[in-house]
Amino acid sequence: MVSSTERPPLQAGERCIPYRLPDRIQRALKVLSTQYMRRIGLIIGIAAIGIAIGGYVFFNGERKPPIRYRTAVVERGQLVSVVSATGTINPVVSVQVGTQVSGMIKSLHADFNSRVKAGDTVAIIDPEPFKARREQAASNLEMARSNVARSKADLAQRKRELDRVQSLLPQQFVSQNDVDVALTNFQSAEAQLRVAEAQVKQAEAALNAAELELKYTVIRSPVDGIVVARNVEVGQTVAASFSTPNLFLIALDLTKMQVDTNVSESDIGGMVEGRDAVFTVDAYPGESFAGVIRQVRLAPMSVQNVVTYNVVVGVENPDLRLKPGMTANVSIVVAQRDDVLKVPNAALRFMPPKGEENRQGGDGQA
Image (cartoon, rainbow, N blue to C red; front, side, top):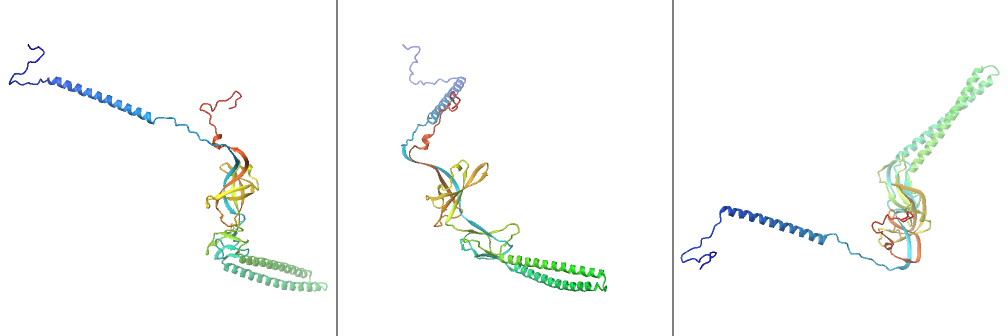
């Protein structure tokens, strides 16, 4: 007996025909399946994003770095307080050589690094215009002297005329008016002679000035030294109308140099003449040079409300290794203690915990 829920077996020659749902039901099932898959995909995507964000925060979020400590041994030794400054190396004495007359440079007799002695010719200005002026002044002097001779002759003539009329006046051969006219002529001749003599002095002064200008066309070194700079070329015209042009810079002695450095007003109290200083230059890395403070100048220099003072450090330079214009990094020892306990400066710093910076005690002090 076959149960009502069981399908009887197929007989020979029979085929099983599949059951087909209605199209409306199939479409409804398809829509439901699509919506279900979309929801599943959305849930999976949200979960993946959450996992990614959580992993990033876990692996890359803020983590307190491990505390590391540096240790140092407290030891005995020397403590030194140093003031550092930057300066320029210059000759102790340098002389600027100029010209007192204007003209064209005809020749140069000194160049860079030339050693010169006092009185040596370093340059010559074209002397021809000055020679012409001297000849003109000499000619004017001769004319003035000729005028003096003529004035003297005229004065002698006027003197004879005055004597003659004065001798004839008692006999009344001439009138008093004739005597007065002769006296006036004599006095006029005297005045003319004085004018001529003054013109001679003026001409002599002009001649002396012309000769002096001609002498100034030869420019000479005023000191013994080395030519550090030459600021002129042959054929160049120099003018001395308003200010003396600087043609050469001559240093007296490069074996003795000085470092001109500026020290701030907060450190100037430790600057004392005779105190030792050490400096370095970029030309000789790793090498130090010794010096002594020669002068602490009182004139302040203010740049953007920062006040500094010029401190001059004297330096011996026997081998001429130090050149004018080099930049020097100067260190000046202002205090020194020997055989004291030392700890690194970083160990002396203290930073209060957060929130306690402004906490004060009962007396109003931090």
